[in-house]
Image (tube, rainbow, N blue to C red; front, side, top):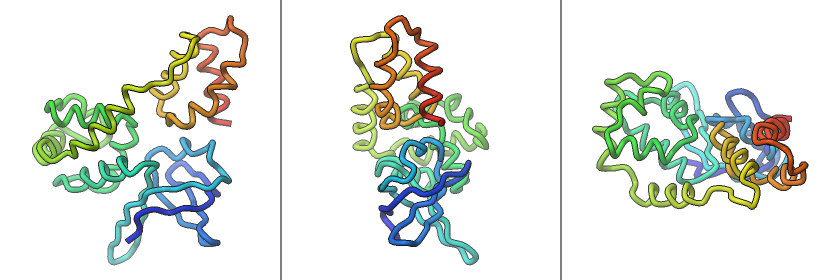
Length: 200
């Protein structure tokens, strides 16, 4: 079984990315492929979960070990398959997800595609007392350290971009470019420019 892949990110589609490891291209299904756009043609470490059936072998990829472990915990829930677990991960709010499970917040869970009330209750039943406490601690630390600078409008825009689903790392990469814009730039203009940089 693979723990992770390390190689050049060569291709991105709406469902997967391709990692070239020593001349072999691995197709890796990920929750938000376009989050990797700023990493195209660079070396990247992707943690992977391998799913093997009689007819296929599928790889699911994650930027962090925490993300991989959370995905695998979701797979242990009765009624949750790989596609449903990946759809939940696409929400890009792991802290909110963990807290929803611990506080039995069914309303939060049913917002994910394919997750009804019965499945949401099953997630809570199966994971409430098992969800990794260390994982939640790591996520809380990450959540409590947002991007902060000396420009409140820029700070709001950067955090808004993360809320839209872009990774903290991707947003950090464009922070200096946005900071170079005129100080009269509004929050909405920062967001608009940021989106152009992140999706070009």
